[in-house]
Length: 565
Image 1 (cartoon, one colour):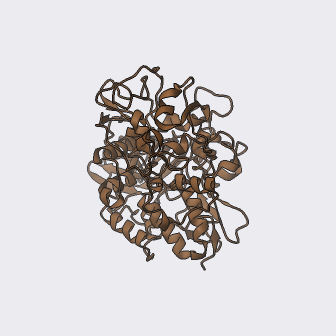
Image 2: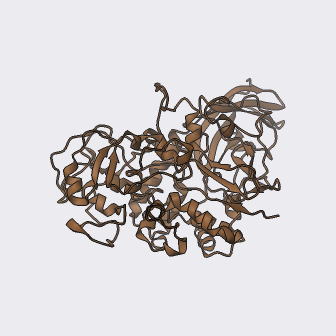
Image 3: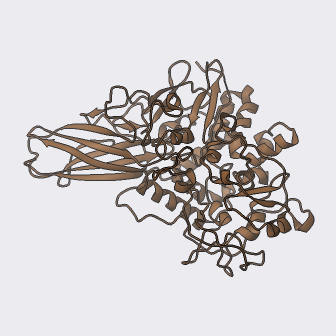
């Protein structure tokens, strides 16, 4: 029975794997966070209103094209360009990210439309929550004006909405409530006081004031994980539910790990920025509007705004449907972001190792050690995301055993209901697979992909970050669920055990191959949209039908088992 709900939907874009995860063998070398050639100076958006000094303003905000006047690379300047000529400018690297395209994201639009279709009386509540993070300039400007958040049909052509999480959202966020529950679910505080916060001390204020009317101001909070945590800690609540549902919590998971830097910093401390915004080196962070360098300080550890995460699948979909979705970033820029995301996933997410191999005439036993290298759960972010172990035992080219195989649609083979898979410690059959995921149940105790209906975590076997403690920060909210019978499921990873029956003719050396696979949008979640009559769902399903659904590979491990082992 469908139950009513309030306050739904999350930010789907950056929330992954807020630290790292996947690709298919063989692995490529890690990609640079920015491999963009220095571009010609091209506006990103059409101007709407102009004021003094040719200033384009949208209430408290500026379009990215105004920031690009000084903060984009130029072929006539060395600022924001690497020694090899790559564009690492804030605007140049941001424009193809999921942050820039948060409002265009067709999966988010389809999911939100489907939720509203099922709960039309909650349309305003649903949109108000969603737009805080997917169209924050529209949401925040309405708040500053004393208006209600506009309906989505009224802003589909709005340039404020189209720019998603734009420059003057994050860089105008006040430090006041960051890191507190008051900031979660997209409730950052923005003032219309023309202050632009940045991570560097002693900024040169005159150029920005002259060209925009805004004043650059040093603010350490701009580099804090608490700023990311405002949108990447999201609560929803179904009507009749006794308590809110924690839809995503990369920030809270990170707080309860060795990577947190909010208390005493250690050699292992890493912020969200340090993993997701790659260090581009030392350089000037602006040039003059004429496209040439001017005399400002060289800054160290300049961060590219590529903001890589776990959603390369969606970046590919944006590229394949650029015109229909109104994506302004170039084809090449979108390719670079997808490549950088896959490099992060493949090289900084998980480590696999095959251990404790025991072979008899009838059986092969072994253990797969899975180590979570990220600063949060693996996977993390939007609750659709899942990872699993694909395992093969081979004799030469012959596959003797396989668990976790998948078909061309991305579905797991030998599985009837992918929303009902229990967590396993021991795999004996090809019909069994170890999946690291969160499965939510509704108020009737049934699995659901409807964010409006989620009330409890029935299963949460996502790998815990290193250093997680039950008595640590947010331990109750982030504790695993359904793993109690697995004694090796612990902070930092898991030990997965296999006992494989061998055929009588299994002679000579055997090879064990393990892949860790990952999907940001599994087929079961897409199935939840198939009954929708909304145009947004129909459009997404058309795009999905032609998309490459091959899962990403987080990592691999191979072990040779001699006949006498």
